Length: 280
Image (cartoon, rainbow, N blue to C red; front, side, top):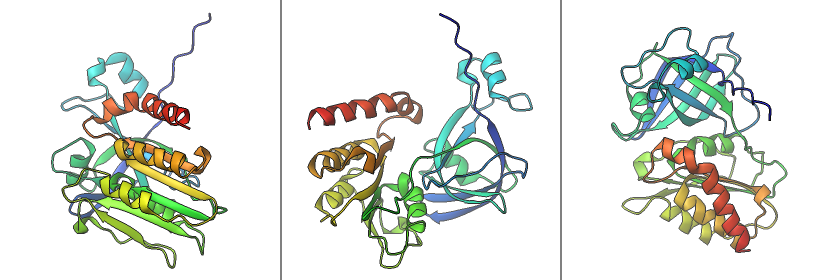
């Protein structure tokens, strides 16, 4: 069998921090600017994402930054880590990219970076990717998620067609984490306050209790993998929603690092899908 060509590393974009904004006690928006000659453009999705690239503490890479060279010359433990975040907005005219980060003190990698980011600082990123946008032909829309899905839900609400029937549920820690989001006339986000309950419990209860409007739905359900699994079962099996009408996946998983979750996410999702297909 012929040797397979080596997989080329994806293109890395270099961005500069323009400004930051504390949206809520645990949400920080970082606005980045990209040079005019950077081949970066978003399409029609409302869940576009980028992967921010972070070097391990104390590791410096040769310039210009080259992932292929780094992987060839540095031990694996010194390769950069990346974290995936949804694009909140992209202003192509001014080359400004807004990304919202959930911040819990020093926990994690990207959150602490966002909390201390300063104007003029450089950060590298990969992307964009994406796969969902509200279907303008749908009879109604379901948007559900936790804080990690809020940027995509907000972007989706801003893109809803006039007169759209939308049920939007967002679970956050408490009332202080609610945000102002532009919504179509007659549409409001139903904010669910978690309090001391497990992540996703309030969200699952709200969606399962929803009296669905008639007709075909376009659904976006993302967040912690445990509650996403429950809602996938409910929507597929109990409500009979076809898979092609759902954008549904775990952005993260309680008790696992980002690297550990990404390593098993595809297999985990496929296994869940097989189990639910078998259950009818």
